[in-house]
Length: 68
Image (tube, rainbow, N blue to C red; front, side):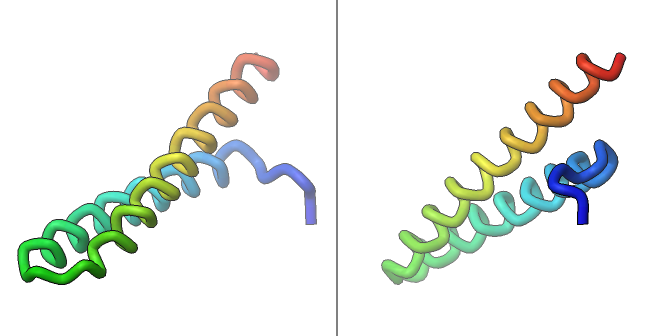
């Protein structure tokens, strides 16, 4: 297995983590609206996946600027 995924895979992971982030935000809103504090877990998951999305986007852009 290569240590660094190819660019297409990084882009796909960025889209996947963005979708998970949006779903986690929606789950947090629903959870808080129902009065459950489980929404805190969803907010933390949304923060993690948001950071992962930015990481994969920046890595893909950096790879494109190096390879041309």
